[in-house]
Image (cartoon, rainbow, N blue to C red; front, side, top):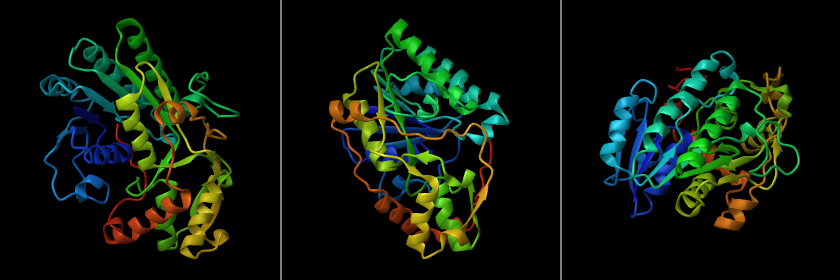
Length: 329
């Protein structure tokens, strides 16, 4: 099966590519708007050979025509779309950029693809933030109630794709995974940033004291779930991927402090909460567990240890990288 992975340079995209390359039945084509990066950020670059993988640098917004032409040449049986503007707080400053990528460019893509006979399965990577604050048992049929421009743009994309599935039988599958983490994540994210800042002796800022509850799930558990959805999921269905319980951000940072021998109070400082921060992201993944046999297998303690090992291994390269989010329209 030939699979095109859009957003292959993203944290989630690169791990999914790496997982597919473990399976000899897949031929993989990666597409992202940035140049292909090093093994610091791309796990598959640690492989000795990549004969079943090809990469193309294309931007969904600026190179939309070239992207559609590439897809028509490759004629993949499946497309997995990780490509998105995905940061929450900056979406308040330039909401139009989030809607342009996450909704408008997507509309052009799906309107073209629904006319092509080669596509059999399209896996859309959505976000549980489309649900808004998750209280109680939040299943796939929960109403969407976004709290930020980012979440609203993802909810709009979900509605758009649903209409194409309903009207034209577009082969849609949707996944919503909670707070993904692991080695090779963007350095400004709270878990890698915690390890890096502790090594640098820089205080870690906790928005609202880190009281927001997240459902941290290891990237490989999510990639395995996405592969199961791609292979065995029912067309038109949404699948949540989440661990059994949530944890406050401050407790995750505390675990990192314990692992690195730092006092929590010395390593952190409280700052104002971010606008639109949802109090909790805890969603129900019973559907994926029962229908697909999926489960999360990497414990938080094991995953945090992996992040620390990755930071230590690539420390010299990490020190030359920016540790701040840089917005690109």
